[in-house]
Length: 388
Length: 131
Image (cartoon, rainbow over all chains, first blue to last red; front, side):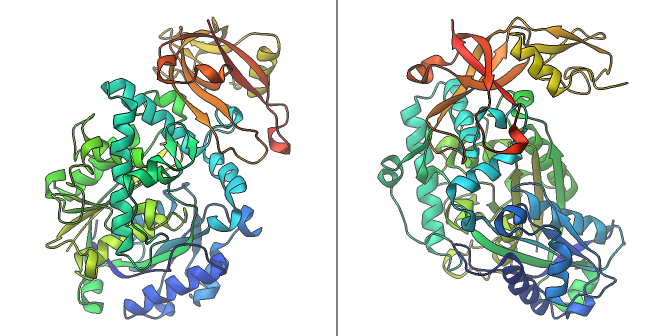
């Protein structure tokens, strides 16, 4: 495989937007191409993420329209990826694989989503379509419900009082809202307290609304190229050191919801390819769609022993300035979660961290960063390790 | 080789009060809901078999913000059947939905899915009744 690098990265502000999916993607895509010192005619393929355009806008087959918005060459194929919340990460991984394999030299990857536009009842229903339709969704399971069941299982398995676990989970939300308050592009920029979380509306026991990420609108895109070409084009190309992706079936097949097997395997692949270990990583953007999700991710990726990561935010180890900075962007929790764009925004944050461009939320001395994105009810996990 | 236990056949079983699954002719493991292969060993040679319909609650949640078309609150739980497979369904007794319900024995039943959406017509969901 050839060495592969990330060039220009871009994201729209996440939140509630009056722009269409295509308009948001055009903004992010053109900015990413421009920051790469390239023009649209130089792009050889578009790997495009979107999950629910059909429900959001009545729009299927969005990739070729995105291609036209950007003025890409007819011979540059535009292909839509859908892996639920891991959509854009999977698109980016495949971009890296195609460039690494020598199929293309320069490609654009990313995604767009207008989840806020749907409103909570429709968004709750359509997100739940990423569970098994016949044997899971029929029971009325929701995504907060999936992670709520994982939280109850975590408390039971490790013998932690639910009230104690909930307090530590709330600390994850407090941390990520604090980080988000430092990110001008975050959906939520207001710091909160543990009491904010514990006094908020119950969504799916034991998860309260401040345990949950928002439905967001937004787009993000980035250019990936063969490394020598990247070095000729930009000052600080960021190298794709390793990637991993793994799959699992319905929750009833996975059984122990505290152990996300697809993540254990995907991160193992990524670490192995990069030739590093968890201790070598300084900054992580991981899939904190719910507070308990950050805890589960830290354990599955090997940063914490199983049953121990629930105290990480409370002890401030995962804050800016801590030993492993987790979600300095604010994460899905505060930066927001436009599902088809989320992975590209995670990569954008890590790339900007490694380039030292993050201002108030800069992780000092960051040299190796990692992206973790989970799709569906633990069915897809994709990891990307980046280094300068 | 055709699919051994289709969703329609699974639902017909539930309508008659039977929880159907597959038993592997190679390793003997039960797979319920059905898959194309044995969940334990991957063998394709499986036979349809009736499950006991008794299991143990492993985790649960109370859904209070529901997908459109559903009326909250309701309990979603995961149950380990006595034969080994886990299934997802609705615990009927809302008042019992606290941490103490984990580990309790339940009997599995079913009910039609309440929906206004065409793709979910003729679906049934599993129900769990505390024993």
